Structure formats: C-alpha cells, structure tokens
Length: 337
Ligand code: SER
View 1 (cartoon, rainbow, N blue to C red):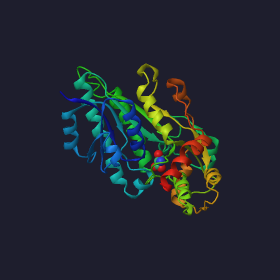
View 2: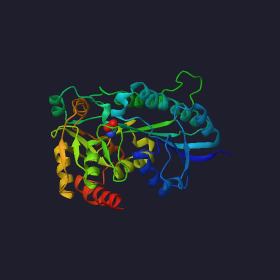
View 3: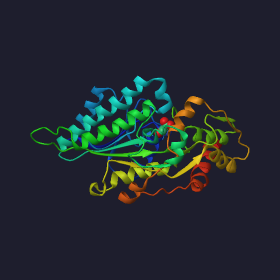
View 4: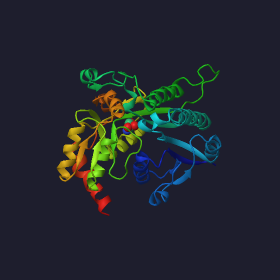
C-alpha cells in the first residue's frame, strides 16, 4: 500500500515554509517536502523531508513508488532576478522541473483513478507592459491581458501555466480511452512579504528588504525609483489563497489561472509605512536601471475579481493590518530574539 501524501516542492523557500506550518495544523495526511536545502529543525519534525533536486527523475520515480500523492504544491523555482543571470538553468528548473512533475501527477491521477490536485504559484512576472504610460492606462490587469513577460522567469511561469492547463484538459487527447487527468489550479501572486523569511533572487524583494533592514537598524538603498508601483500581499494571505484554491469545488472554477492580491504601493509609500513603525530607518533610493526596467513592466495592480467571485477570495490583511499586526511585531521579535 502506498502511503497517501501531500507533496510540497521548493519547501524551504518563503512560501514553502509558511505553507508547511499552515498545512501541518490542518491535515492528518502525511506531508512530504522536497528541496535542495534542509528545512529549519522545527519544521523537519512536522514533515518527511527529502533533500534533492526536482530534476532528479530517479528521485521522482522513487517518490511515486512509495507515496500516493493527493495534492502537489509545486513551489520550486528560480525567481526573476536570479533567472536573468542564469537563464538556461532557470529554464531547466522552472520549466523542465514543472514538466516532470506534471507527468508524474498525470500518471498518479490515472493510476489512482482520481485527479491529483496540482497547485502552481505563478506571478505578476507573467505580465509585461511595454512602457510606463501603458502601465498607468491599464493599472488593474486581468488574467488574459498583457501576457508579454520580459524576464526568463515570467516566460517560464506563463508557459507552465499553459502546460498545466494542457495536462489537465487535453493530455493524451487522441488516445482511445481518455485517462483521468490531473486537476491544475494556478494563482498569480503579487510581491509577497513575510515576517519570518527574507526573499532571495526576486525583483519585488525591495519591499521586504526595506522592512527587514529597518528592523535590524541597517541602512537600505532601494534599487527602484520612488514612484514605481506594484501589488503586494502578506504571506498569511498567500497561504490562505493557496489553501482556499485547493479546497474550492471544481465546478466553481471557470478558469485554471487566477490573480490574487491585497494592496498596491509605490516604493515611496512602502518606505512611508516602514518609517511609521521604524522612524529611525535609513532608506535611500538608488535605482538599478536594469532591475527597475523589470519592475516597470509589471502591473501597478491586479484585478482579482474572478477569484473573489468564483471561490470567495478575500485577503485578511490590508496594508495597515499587514504592518501593524503581522509584519512589524513578528519581525521585531525575530531580530530582538
Ligand atoms: N517575487 C517574484 C520575483 O520578484 C515575482 O513573483 O521574482
């Protein structure tokens, strides 16, 4: 008998660590985690962790021989800035890694006669607006608008959204008998901000970096202009949206891909929120033209009305609540501790 399990790839990353805690509290099903890195010791106790590479096919086949995967949270990815330095490696991890896992989920769905839920986080990076005027004119983009990413990471996410949709609707469409197909569900996240972890290799990182530097009394030079605006969300809402989408009845979902967001801020507004709680913070703006270009191409806001309408999405944390109740108290404790 194979043991039923939930698999989280990229589990040691920011979303992964937050998701492990939330899932461990809610489910009796075994949680299997995969990452190149180890997890913090308190999380190692809550899961079965495999330290390994998503591109290791032998490892993946061993997993399926031992476990019946009910749900897969495929979080493993190289983020946008890092991907620009090693685009081919990013393609391998972000695309080939996703393809292997989709194949694995397709086989599992067929074998168990029930769809495996495949939950995939995508990103604002799947959008690409050509210039600042267009960014102003189309400030709240809908899922099907401006899908012209200008980063390797964005291209990878956009393609994998399509790949997942293909596997859930058309995979082996010419076979004599159609197999049970996987159930692919995807969220496009804004920039995420966690109190417990610091992002690495992303381009929306300037927000969380401002805050974490301020809490440690370290000066911070923000790498984008003050006026640039993108959407953000606190990590508990990211986890909430992942869990809500997983739980949503299949009949309610009219599309495979949903925007979700909480609030939009310019970099100057972000600094003002940080200053409100850390008045001594030293934040300057020293734009890096290249990273600035990437953020300029991302939408100022996301239209998440489809998620609200179809599965009741609503963030818990406004900007005020995010700072006052989640970010600042936890970050202070983290660095004082
Ligand atoms: N936070 C991600 C990045 O900056 C975007 O999804 O790469």
